[in-house]
Length: 336
Image (spheres, rainbow, N blue to C red):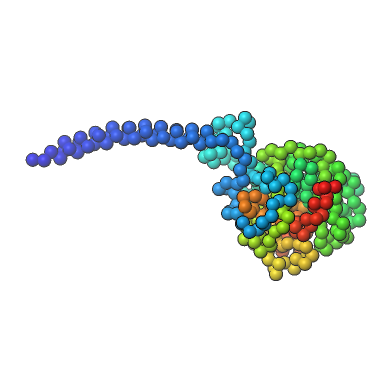
């Protein structure tokens, strides 16, 4: 006669005890796993799974023009002395520190944190006593890349300029004043659609790099066709709607595509054409001077400088001054 009930009971008792042992072992293993992750050394890193897509290795094959071993980093971690183990725990498990809503910004974009684009600067120029605003990109400790037309109102030139760095809310950024502004010698201030709409601001004192202040890479040469296959974004503080004119305090971002030369009627004037991945999205007034950011080889490169748009905001592709077509000017300005 088989004792099925006894056998079942014996098995059940063993399984219950085994479960308690298994839970204890699992908990020990889980805690050990957390401890191992928290013990990992703090390092600066370029991107993570939250960053845009895979790199595009053929976009540029030369070393960056400036700070080749330091430029183009984003989401840079602070040193261990300035971050707590709890902050690292939240980072590892991606628990959000704040609730950021995906509001329609940059004409169809979304809010950005400054560590996503630590090279971004809010540019302010004084012309006839009035303040005009643009966007710019940090390229080294003393220089910011932006658009030439930001410093003119018709034939009248700016008498002063400054940049705000280190915060997605530009009003909370740290201000640095311009010592000089170098305008491309071939720029036509009467019609910046003719090309060379690019300028370099030289600051009156050096920037201190941190997770929220970093230089973007300036490519010495690049490939337009390969750029079209790369993850690409634009950033700026421009209008969120053209009419009525609404301008947010917080930095904005938008995923975009770089068009081929056949699709860009301004290509022969030294421009690249950039449009939002989604129809009806793009840059607007105030985004001028901001970068087209191409993510390649785990670095961020400034491919273009926002110059102008045709028609209404986001109606047609935005024209960006092609950086590598003006690389000699940038080199001379930085070395001046």
